[in-house]
Image (cartoon, rainbow, N blue to C red):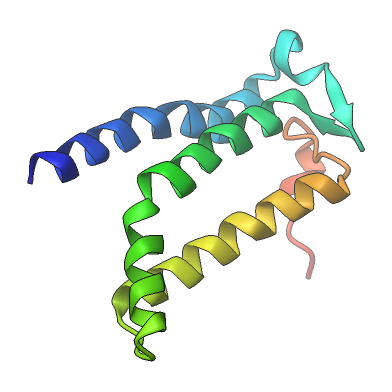
Length: 117
């Protein structure tokens, strides 16, 4: 039980920078972190977000990968396999999008939130 509690609280601490990078940085647009485009127009804070998300996915979720491997090796599927497939697909989709690059949406643009009818 202690091992799971440590993983939970570590993940909880690691999710705080992710939430700040997702919700606060694009709106406040601090120059020291948004002005540096690394590759393909992807700002630095997106790479920082991917770094923290990768730690959470791979290190904190390693028990799901191990359990899924054992279940699939025995030709069965359980809830761990479903969790592993879902979270890995979402994480991999984000990593691929970062690799391909994108034009960042300007959160300060009032027309961005306009509904198209």
